[in-house]
Figure 1 (cartoon, rainbow, N blue to C red):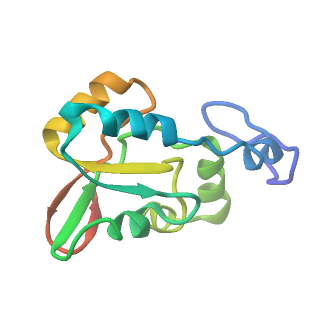
Figure 2 (cartoon, helix red, strand yellow):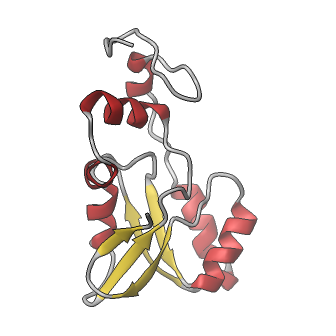
Length: 142
C-alpha cells in the first residue's frame, strides 16, 4: 500500500482512494423529516449535521450547558477511507473523531425511548452512537 491515488486501500473491502474521495454526499433530509413527522417521535431534542469536520466537536454544539455525551466506539462501521487515513498518518482514535466525521454525517439527539424505536424502525442506516449525560465533555467508550 503506497497511499497514492489509484492504489487500493487496505481493510475489509478494497477501495480506490480517488473513488473514496469522490463518493457523493448522502442527503438525509427526507429520512430526518420522516422521523420527525411521526407522532411517537416527539422526543427529538436536537439534530447535528456533520459534513466533514470532527464528529466529537460537532455534536458538542447540539447540547445545552451542563450536558455531555458518551460515544460508543464500535457503534457503527468506519468507512475504509478513514481507516486508511488513520493508518497512513499514525493518528490515534480520539484525534480521528475530533478531526473527521468517521462516516457519521447526521446525529439526532433523542430520548432513550425514541432512540430504541428509531433504530428498530429505520433499518441499517441508523445506529445508536452514544448517550447524553450531565457534564460538559464528550467521552468515548474504551
